[in-house]
Image 1 (cartoon, rainbow, N blue to C red):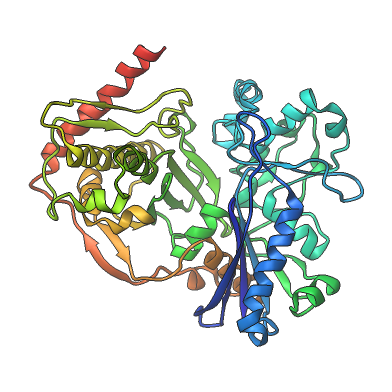
Image 2: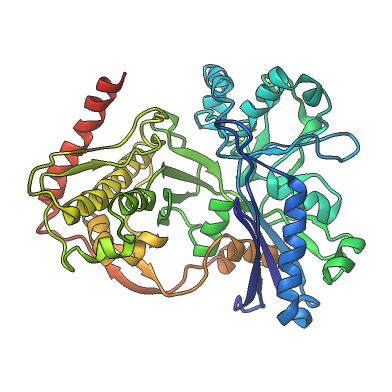
Length: 484
């Protein structure tokens, strides 16, 4: 048996698989986010331990005998969080989370230093870890002076489980301290925030052993003592391991609250100018790129609230068969946009509205606009040297047949729909636990699920969608100029 622990922002999920990778059961425990000031987002790291205990206790109600046979554990977690630890191993302050924007000034200052983009392959975003420590140095100097270790959220869980401060490449790539090409901490990047390597965790690959379960914790959790904890992965890389998106050119499009176009690479291919993330993957010798859309299905959720209509009901009003775009255009920048604009202040808009523009027209424009945003990410990946031949669609938006047809036609790529199952970050973490425990071949374990069906581009409509995309692209500079 193998266990995956996925530390999400809103819950901790524990998932159990056997040696055939069959999911035996899962359980989760809720987490809360504190927002004491505008733009702040924090969590108490001890709540992660409490949630782990609760999730495993719940899972143990029905799978106690299987948990007693666990041979390896994998960890996954939300990235970029600054968990600061003192010399006695105590938490100094609440963890500053990935969606905290307080350090935007510090992020801009670090990003102006050319070594950051050159070595990390990424823009220094306010959500990343390094600017948060620089913010602490300025605003909380006494707390900053006590920092002995900076850990990412899942690695604080590891510290509790194993007593060791260890991280891995995929999560560490999102700190702005890692030389992503060399897969190593960089002294110059660390010194820019007043830190050094002694304050960083040791680094391993996500498939490697990274500590063993302490006897006292094992007894409490009713797990075998001394079992290995895998390096694990950041949440998106772990999801990719669960989806089998590990080979060069393999990709998935996540139509979730936010949108992600994730591509696996066998070499380091940065393109920071287009706000593409270039991170290490969880498997040795692999990297990945991500185009990020901040409001994907969240755009449909917004329209749902405005129209007092369930999102599924909105997409159900569209025809079963894809039709050409109308005059309405939607920019999905409701909370700014990451790829390709890196613009936190831009906001969304509708254009081309007429008296004939009803609710279904607006829904159709939202679906098309989000699909066009994915095309922006596809173009940004192409600029960085990644050419995709197909993508797998996951997330809530992939339940809409119309949306899938629009996405396939806009991207001009086949879109595969996997068979039903849980292929998320907890499953990917469990796979990494299996690999580390058994010294298994990562590529033979992290295989893709079977494809249920494939949506092909509608060749009769590609010209119409190409024309609409050009109008979509022209709209951003127009509204940016009006807002500045």
